[in-house]
Amino acid sequence: GDSVTQMEGPVTLSEEAFLTINCTYTATGYPSLFWYVQYPGEGLQLLLKATKADDKGSNKGFEATYRKETTSFHLEKGSVQVSDSAVYFCALPISSGSARQLTFGSGTQLTVLP
Amino acid sequence: DAMVIQNPRYQVTQFGKPVTLSCSQTLNHNVMYWYQQKSSQAPKLLFHYYDKDFNNEADTPDNFQSRRPNTSFCFLDIRSPGLGDAAMYLCATDTGTGAYNEQFFGPGTRLTVL
Image (cartoon, rainbow over all chains, first blue to last red):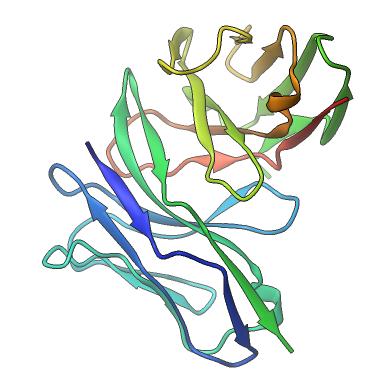
């Protein structure tokens, strides 16, 4: 079935370091792909999305490119800040009854040190 | 601002004592979801409503029930909470139409079972 595989965490970086969090997917067809972020004690927020192959989603300095040839949607940021410390989830919508549920990767805990 | 609201943010209950968690939305979305998220794990879908149509995930325990009296509100009832039900419960919504729609999450209710 459709699924996402996310790199094992946690990740600890110094401020202004470069970030990559790997995500690969298995899917029938070409679904949308999402990155969600969860700050401590809060719900999930959509960080960015891509709806078709070669699309690049971007938001708050984060980017991810939907690559069909490698079935990947890696999250990158050129210079992380302490405020980026959070858990990041890659997600894929799959059909579930009458709607589309999200299947999530395992999550990557990012800690950015000053 | 249109949003997804969950009350209460923190709920403490006793082992076996029924508890109800609440979710409301001002987005007028067709679909409402309930996820369970245990510590350091990805959210796991319990069930969802598409309008009044209830869809239960196959592995959701019978102990968990849901009600959606109208478009705006959805409730999660845990009939006899066990220690293993302590978790963050997340409500989410989407339009239910199209292949690209994102889900909008509430801030979550953290349930403690004593």
